[in-house]
Amino acid sequence: MPNFRLYGITGENFHPGRSLVDVMEEAILGGVDIVQFRDKSSSKEELVRKAKALRALTTRYGVPFIVNDHVDLALEVDADGIHLGQGDMPIAEARQRVGSRIIGISTHAIGEALLAEQQGADYIGAGPVYATATKADVVAPVGLSYIREVAEQISIPFVAIGGIKLDNVEEVIRAGATRICAVSEIVGSTDVTGTCRTFLTKLDRKGVDT
Ligand code: TZP
Ligand code: MG
Image 1 (tube, rainbow, N blue to C red):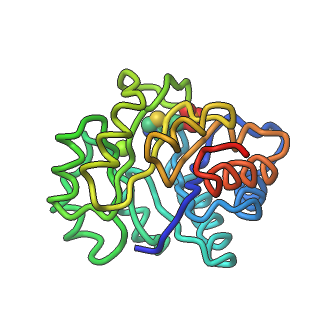
Image 2: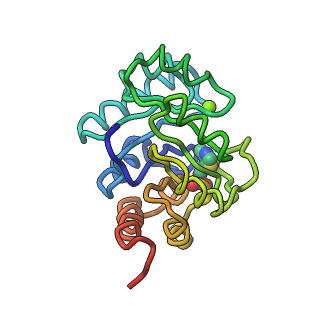
Image 3: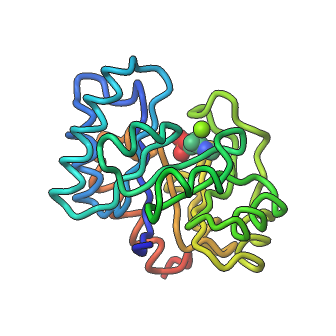
């Protein structure tokens, strides 16, 4: 899969008066290099409309586009991949459906991460590192110790997620994360592009401020 460092996920209710596409474009301009469409509340028609708009945007910038949960929607809009949760379709079944497209899966424990790698996931999400209000059914925070475990034991790319902000990302990076995802900190920012650039500067400095 293409390399990435700053994983952007669409948020809901975070950009009053601003369009989903505008916010994600600002994020891409700030350095988000992979975009996931995650939407737990829209109707089927709305999902298709939004996914098509985001597909057009990400194609324009040459950024991989991932659809959360909906394999049919991912295929319909020709997304580059899908993102699964532990309770979603098994990886083997997803692989049959999406072929060589990217498959990512959320993990919260090292056993899940090792299994995902063994079953052919292209990347894993590791988290939630900290408490988050963004995901309703989220499990308890796994902390930095899980990031250290994954960094030591997993060979496929992993992205740290969950409650990551500009003011705590350094310790996540120092725990071994080279790829991070922040939802509310990015889409809720008044300066989306600047926030993304600052995340990347911190990744460049490997979490060590000079
Ligand atoms: N999966 C694990 S935590 C999370 C998802 C989708 C939400 C992360 O959102 P935020 O706002 O960066 O805490
Ligand atoms: Mg899911």
